[in-house]
Length: 348
Image (cartoon, rainbow, N blue to C red; front, side):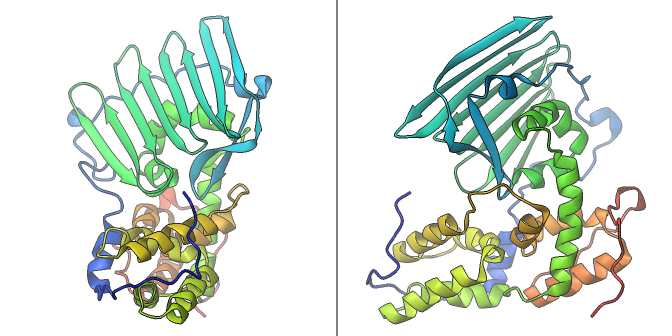
């Protein structure tokens, strides 16, 4: 996307949006056609296939592309790719990789066939990703579709039941049912991320989010909304100041900006928000600290991870959410799911 010059003069109208409505939009960043978190009776739940077994080393051995995990999303590292096609077929495993490039921006098509699973991965222009997995014995199929920006969709079907979920990041989606997610895509992710564990990254991110919430200092929904209104202010000085303030706040504003794109904004405001999102997207891989900063104001992620926290951590999270202008966590913590490797000593 072409970036907009922040100095550009343009007429804008204040949207006058109400942040109470915005809060509802943020809370719907995961839409629940049927949520894995709301468990069905055992006889009605989608069947769980047997995990396929293959040696996920093909990406590493071919060295044709390098994947990155940035802001909870997969993308290709543009400078590190090599065009061409490679394939292998041995011991019941068939794999092929094709890499193309347009003006230095790579695209990829990957296919895996085993006796148990069929898996495809398509990446267009480095950031638009589609994964599809199907287990041959059960017929269960899983599809992940990730656009360059915006909501990622996960569709899971076994022919009789279909579940559809939306989330801002791949972490949102995996949290709903880590077992099924990993069954379909776990080995592939470990390969794409060069052995890094999504499970460990999510555990460490949860702890980092609690620490980020304890420190505070991030803007509230109301503050962000007021500044976004000023992106459409009548004077260039006001628009420039608002633009710079949002950049200064950094990635904690991203979940709110994404939600505001569903609200009544003028063309100038939308263009500036897209430009801010581009500028706030890092070029290096996520760390627990960077993900915590991104997700600390994401109410939907707090909701799906609430089961991980002990009582003290829930108190810290709820204090932060109150300051942010959001509802407190309502999901009770479950001891079996907590990742509290360390405790928070006090509510400062």
